[in-house]
Length: 155
Image 1: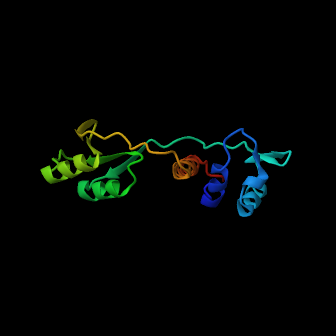
Image 2: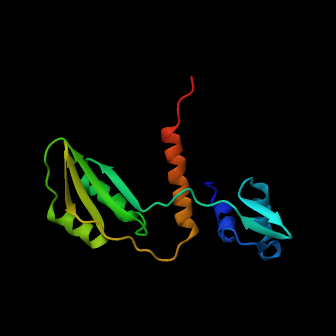
Protein backbone atom coordinates (compact mmCIF):
# COMPACT_ATOMS: atom_id res chain seq x y z
CA UNK A 1 0.00 0.00 0.00
CA UNK A 2 2.29 2.76 -1.18
CA UNK A 3 -0.40 5.14 -2.42
CA UNK A 4 -0.18 8.17 -0.16
CA UNK A 5 -3.77 9.10 -0.97
CA UNK A 6 -5.00 5.66 0.14
CA UNK A 7 -2.88 5.74 3.29
CA UNK A 8 -4.31 9.14 4.20
CA UNK A 9 -7.78 7.63 3.91
CA UNK A 10 -6.80 4.62 6.03
CA UNK A 11 -5.20 6.95 8.56
CA UNK A 12 -8.65 8.46 9.18
CA UNK A 13 -9.86 5.09 10.46
CA UNK A 14 -8.58 3.66 13.75
CA UNK A 15 -7.99 -0.07 13.38
CA UNK A 16 -11.01 -2.16 14.33
CA UNK A 17 -13.24 0.79 15.27
CA UNK A 18 -16.40 1.50 13.23
CA UNK A 19 -16.42 5.02 11.76
CA UNK A 20 -19.62 6.35 10.20
CA UNK A 21 -19.16 6.75 6.45
CA UNK A 22 -20.76 10.18 6.70
CA UNK A 23 -17.72 11.42 8.65
CA UNK A 24 -15.33 10.78 5.76
CA UNK A 25 -14.78 12.99 2.72
CA UNK A 26 -16.40 11.52 -0.41
CA UNK A 27 -13.09 11.24 -2.28
CA UNK A 28 -11.55 9.24 0.61
CA UNK A 29 -14.66 7.10 0.94
CA UNK A 30 -14.62 6.23 -2.77
CA UNK A 31 -10.91 5.34 -2.65
CA UNK A 32 -11.32 3.16 0.43
CA UNK A 33 -14.30 1.31 -1.05
CA UNK A 34 -12.41 0.71 -4.30
CA UNK A 35 -9.45 -0.94 -2.56
CA UNK A 36 -9.83 -4.60 -1.59
CA UNK A 37 -8.73 -5.98 1.76
CA UNK A 38 -8.39 -2.70 3.65
CA UNK A 39 -11.81 -2.13 5.17
CA UNK A 40 -15.09 -3.82 5.95
CA UNK A 41 -18.35 -1.97 5.73
CA UNK A 42 -21.51 -2.59 7.75
CA UNK A 43 -24.35 -0.48 9.10
CA UNK A 44 -23.17 2.64 7.20
CA UNK A 45 -19.78 2.44 8.95
CA UNK A 46 -16.30 1.49 7.84
CA UNK A 47 -13.81 -0.54 9.85
CA UNK A 48 -10.13 -0.57 8.92
CA UNK A 49 -8.86 -4.14 8.75
CA UNK A 50 -5.45 -3.33 7.28
CA UNK A 51 -2.40 -2.42 9.38
CA UNK A 52 1.10 -1.36 8.40
CA UNK A 53 3.40 -4.31 7.65
CA UNK A 54 5.91 -3.07 10.23
CA UNK A 55 7.75 -0.01 11.42
CA UNK A 56 10.96 1.68 10.41
CA UNK A 57 13.14 2.72 13.33
CA UNK A 58 16.48 3.52 11.70
CA UNK A 59 17.83 4.70 8.37
CA UNK A 60 21.33 3.54 7.47
CA UNK A 61 23.39 5.14 4.73
CA UNK A 62 26.21 2.90 3.60
CA UNK A 63 29.20 3.51 1.33
CA UNK A 64 32.79 4.74 1.12
CA UNK A 65 32.35 8.55 1.24
CA UNK A 66 31.83 9.95 4.78
CA UNK A 67 30.88 13.54 3.79
CA UNK A 68 28.32 12.61 1.12
CA UNK A 69 26.76 9.93 3.35
CA UNK A 70 26.53 12.39 6.23
CA UNK A 71 24.85 15.00 4.01
CA UNK A 72 22.26 12.43 2.90
CA UNK A 73 21.61 11.37 6.50
CA UNK A 74 21.21 14.97 7.68
CA UNK A 75 18.68 15.67 4.91
CA UNK A 76 16.54 12.73 6.02
CA UNK A 77 13.94 13.18 8.72
CA UNK A 78 15.02 12.85 12.37
CA UNK A 79 11.88 10.86 13.21
CA UNK A 80 14.16 7.89 12.53
CA UNK A 81 17.56 7.14 14.01
CA UNK A 82 20.09 7.96 11.30
CA UNK A 83 23.38 6.15 10.94
CA UNK A 84 26.24 6.32 8.45
CA UNK A 85 28.26 3.15 7.85
CA UNK A 86 31.51 3.77 6.01
CA UNK A 87 32.82 0.68 4.26
CA UNK A 88 36.54 0.71 3.61
CA UNK A 89 39.21 -1.78 2.64
CA UNK A 90 41.82 0.27 4.54
CA UNK A 91 41.57 1.81 8.02
CA UNK A 92 40.41 5.43 7.78
CA UNK A 93 39.94 8.34 10.17
CA UNK A 94 37.06 10.77 10.30
CA UNK A 95 38.04 14.44 10.45
CA UNK A 96 36.91 16.56 13.40
CA UNK A 97 34.57 18.69 11.26
CA UNK A 98 32.64 15.61 10.10
CA UNK A 99 32.50 14.27 13.66
CA UNK A 100 31.22 17.58 15.01
CA UNK A 101 28.57 17.88 12.31
CA UNK A 102 27.39 14.31 12.92
CA UNK A 103 27.13 15.00 16.66
CA UNK A 104 25.26 18.26 16.05
CA UNK A 105 22.68 16.56 13.84
CA UNK A 106 22.47 13.31 15.83
CA UNK A 107 23.78 11.11 13.02
CA UNK A 108 25.82 8.10 14.10
CA UNK A 109 29.00 7.16 12.25
CA UNK A 110 30.38 3.63 12.11
CA UNK A 111 33.45 2.47 10.17
CA UNK A 112 33.39 -1.08 8.81
CA UNK A 113 36.79 -2.30 7.69
CA UNK A 114 37.15 -6.01 6.95
CA UNK A 115 35.63 -7.91 9.90
CA UNK A 116 35.91 -5.01 12.35
CA UNK A 117 33.40 -2.23 13.06
CA UNK A 118 34.14 0.86 15.12
CA UNK A 119 31.46 3.23 16.37
CA UNK A 120 32.93 6.69 15.88
CA UNK A 121 29.91 8.87 16.68
CA UNK A 122 26.92 7.49 18.63
CA UNK A 123 23.53 7.73 16.97
CA UNK A 124 21.01 10.02 18.67
CA UNK A 125 17.55 8.80 19.56
CA UNK A 126 14.85 9.52 17.03
CA UNK A 127 12.60 12.52 17.55
CA UNK A 128 9.36 10.74 18.27
CA UNK A 129 6.76 13.43 17.76
CA UNK A 130 3.23 12.48 16.78
CA UNK A 131 2.74 9.29 14.75
CA UNK A 132 1.60 10.13 11.27
CA UNK A 133 0.75 8.72 7.91
CA UNK A 134 4.29 9.57 6.78
CA UNK A 135 5.76 6.90 9.09
CA UNK A 136 3.23 4.40 7.76
CA UNK A 137 4.13 5.29 4.17
CA UNK A 138 7.84 4.79 4.89
CA UNK A 139 7.07 1.38 6.44
CA UNK A 140 5.09 0.42 3.33
CA UNK A 141 7.95 1.51 1.05
CA UNK A 142 10.45 -0.48 3.13
CA UNK A 143 8.20 -3.54 2.99
CA UNK A 144 7.77 -3.15 -0.77
CA UNK A 145 11.55 -2.92 -1.19
CA UNK A 146 12.09 -5.99 1.00
CA UNK A 147 9.57 -7.97 -1.04
CA UNK A 148 11.28 -6.90 -4.26
CA UNK A 149 14.76 -7.76 -2.94
CA UNK A 150 13.66 -11.18 -1.68
CA UNK A 151 11.50 -12.16 -4.64
CA UNK A 152 12.51 -15.35 -6.40
CA UNK A 153 13.21 -14.99 -10.09
CA UNK A 154 10.88 -17.09 -12.19
CA UNK A 155 12.38 -19.06 -15.01
